[in-house]
Image (cartoon, rainbow, N blue to C red; front, side, top):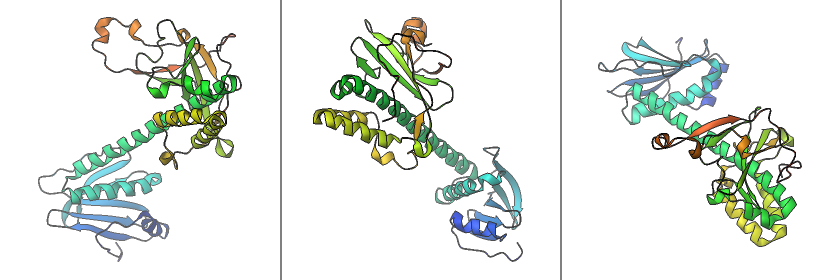
Length: 328
């Protein structure tokens, strides 16, 4: 590679790789030179690309690409049959670098085939992304519930509001107030689409009316509220009512899955996208145990579905006035 330098057995951090690419320099990093197989990480300054080259033992085939964004082809490299792995997207070069480091580590430390190393790395990344998405959804949902809690407290006081918030304690619906239950659904989508979990979430309890509130949030920038800010404001307001209300609220917030340790990249700021929508439970499309035949219930163990409430309007008479709803 035009006299390119050859480095030690560790793939350097991205900052070093980026320096080479920005200055049209090339480099070769022999990651492993064991008898089992040779691995090389190469930086191609002229084409501004990076590749991972993994020697293929005689018994190992070149694996197929696990993604349209990743190219895996068999090549001859320094006289050995190898698999060349690279990204087809320059915009993803930084992320591909991290992938190459993880794949190379699995090949060397676990003596994995390239196929297995690619599959395990991508599966683990998917799990990480799914876990983050789940945590973010829980935090958005909690933000909406705290906004409703604040509205209830404004009308009925913090002690009553905290007592009414029963969702974190394991109840099917989020709030239980005098004469009715309330389910709060919060979305960051432009449409009023909400995920419904289970067959009971939109099913009223016997002898109780069920209402459903739809809240839409939008990214708030510098003018928005983080979940941490809302939590702290609610705790401070509850403290002004009584130490008992604050203590109980802190327990409920923790039970709802909030932790200060989740702050950082997840601390997005939010504003209300629109005025809240409030509907009778009977007006919300749902799937419930009372609507399915017994034969189906015996074979269905888990249900998650999405409802779209766009275009619907709140009735004139409401059991709870949420017109002044805000993110505390």
